[in-house]
Amino acid sequence: MAENSVQVMVVEDEQEIRELMALHLLRQGYRVTECGSAEEALAEMNAKNYQIFILDWMLPGLHGVDILERIKAKNKNSSVLMVTAKTEPQDIVLGLERGADDYLTKPFNPSVLMARVKALLRRANPKAEEVIKDDSEVNIHGLKMNFKTYEISYNGETLHLTPSEFKLLGTLVQNHGVVLTREKLIENIQGEGISVVGRTIDTHVFGLRKKLGGWGDRIETIRGVGYRVKMDQA
Image (cartoon, rainbow, N blue to C red; front, side, top):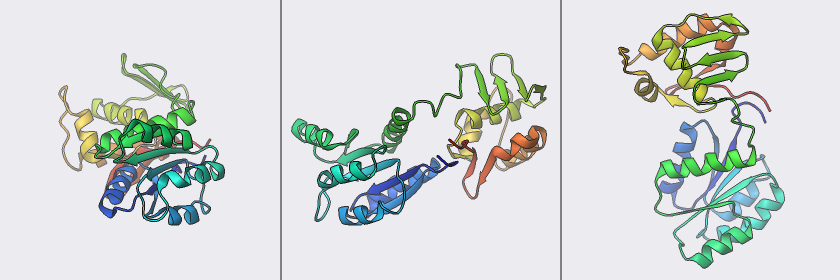
C-alpha cells in the first residue's frame, strides 16, 4: 500500500452527516470519497481500491445492506462499517451476515467512529502498527527513541534534541500516518517546564528536520492543519 493512501468511501444520503464523517477522516489523514446513494457507490468503487467502506443502511433506492455482497465481491480485502439508526438485534445480525465487518448505530460520537475505523484497519493488517515495541521505546526506519531514558539515535548515531523537540517528535512517530493539528501537538508536549504556544510548533519542526537529516523528510506538513509522519510503503 502506498504512503498515506488508505482510501475510505463514505456512503450516506444525509449531506450533513456525510460531510461530518468525511471531515474527521480527512483530519486523520485518510483519503475520502463521498457518495450519496448506493448506486453512486457501486459506480464509484470501480475507480479505486478502497480499504474501508462506511455504509449507511437506509439509502434512497437500493439500501446499504442490499449492496454489501457486491462490495465484498469487488473488494475482497476491504472492511465495511455499517452505520444506521436500526438497532434491533435481527437487523444487526442481517448486516453482519451480509458481509459487514462492524456495526455503528446513530447517533454516534465521531471519536467512536474513528476508533472503529482504526480497529478495522488493524484487523485487516495486524502488522501495520508494529512500530512501537512497548510503552517506552519506538523504533521506526532507523530512528530509535527511548521514553524512559530520553535517548534518541538515527542509524546508530546519537542525536541531541531539546525537551520540546523530543516530546514533539515522540508524539508524531507514535501516531505515524495520522495528521496531528498544531493544537493537538501543543496539548501533548505542554507541561514539565515546557511552554509551547502558537507558531512555536513550526519552529520546533524546522529544528527537528535539520537535526534528523534524511529522516526529517518523513515529517510532512499538512497545509492549514498540522503535521504527520509519513507511513512507509507496504
